[in-house]
Image (cartoon, rainbow, N blue to C red; front, top):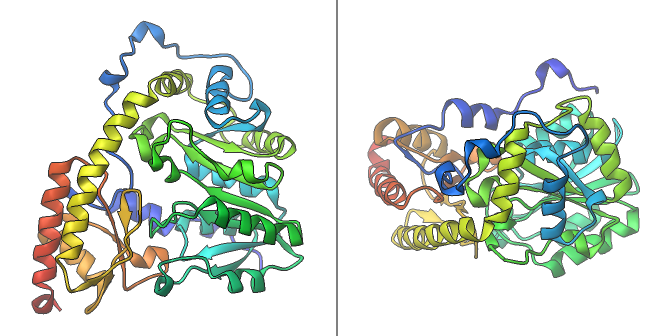
Length: 366
């Protein structure tokens, strides 16, 4: 059945834009915004209009150099979500079958629906700490599978898949001739000076998306990208001509500066996250009303509420305790909620205190 374009929407993004704000925000999954003043950019270094073409050459060069790939394999995109859209659109035709992890990030599923793809699922069960169910993945793969879709770190659990696990995915994909789309935006939170990417495992099969958004607090630059085989990369550029066409040049200039100063930006983010993760781990260890899988890296964790209605709890937390978390229903897990600790430490500490108070009062609020 053909999906209606009139029904195209992302419930999660609507909630994030309209309902997630609170005095204490534990819903955001990125690092706190990096201040423009600390980029040390003078206004005279910026220009409104830049050269025409498929991306700003110094920015494409910076991305290619950082990830050790050819510039012809780099596609500029307005953030990671649009990079995911371009990758899916270029690798498929309407009616093609794709295989997406479950639970999954809502906008990925909605983009696939919009593109008219047949979406099948493979499991990453909470019972096994959101590891890939390899038997289920292999069983679900067919000759019709065009793309396998994965987030790494996994969104919403934050679980990291190693390169050995990615090689296993690639081995399965080769059997049916499928591409592998990996959203690596959270993998940037490994904060490596020489970052690894699954693209190098098989540059003809992996489609990698990422951005400067989540790990570095640079969301406003909208600096995203895709790493792809050159033929598919060119197809993505042509698809983008139908959408955004050109990019905001001041954002491109600032993004080049950000890459040049990424070591300084990384130090700030890494220090903040190390402190905040200790607060979060101590909080979770103090609770007997939550189950959780502790990810080795990143800003997020995805605990399960042992008793009570999680959706109602999330509403009460925001309304009565001025604290927001993401209801797990947006990630197909209605008994869970996602907590993010990338904001200022004072806000995280206060938000966790409020979360604890709300949990303590949960029995009387049911």
